Length: 101
Image (cartoon, rainbow, N blue to C red; front, side, top):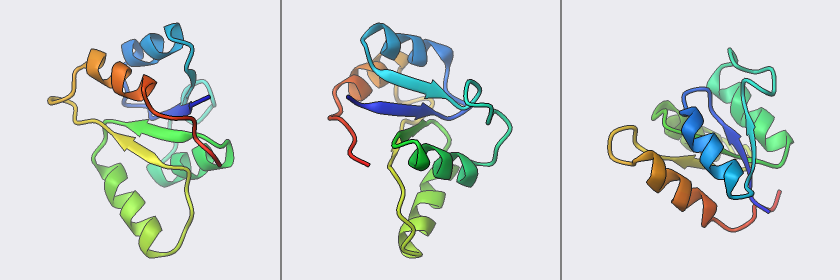
């Protein structure tokens, strides 16, 4: 099953939509990391065997830097805040295959 870690900038409607479809979702807030910096969130999600879903473009640079440094991470799924609707984000995430840590 797909396991997703929600960045703190993701609307609750996306989290709720995924959960209603049976997707395993954990938010940064629920995990006690609501105020954590993005690199910490990426490391936390990786340690939990989850991919990060974010609408924060900064995460892309963090992922590139990690790849360039040879640092393994679970994955990042990015959706532009204005170009990807809540419904589209839910459908796209629901369709992803299960993550393998």
